[in-house]
Image (cartoon, rainbow, N blue to C red):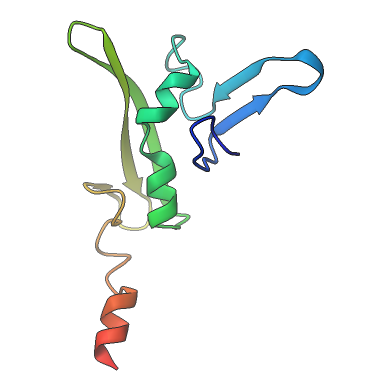
Length: 109
């Protein structure tokens, strides 16, 4: 679903039908009661999902506070089920499952 900031996110949900105002992040359900739509602006999940489309990556997220609690942002971590390791740079994948990239194939030809 498209977030209010224009990016496509599979974890964002909103129901505005007939006067309802239900908005939620399904990645952060149960982890934080202080979620609001403004946090979608700092979330990296839409960018990660756009860069890499892989079913074995599991995402977890939390809200971190910076500058005495005035600035809040979403911190995302990823775990690869196939290689059983934490993904350091989620935009690139774990490195073991995605060892062959499009660029490597292009350069080999």
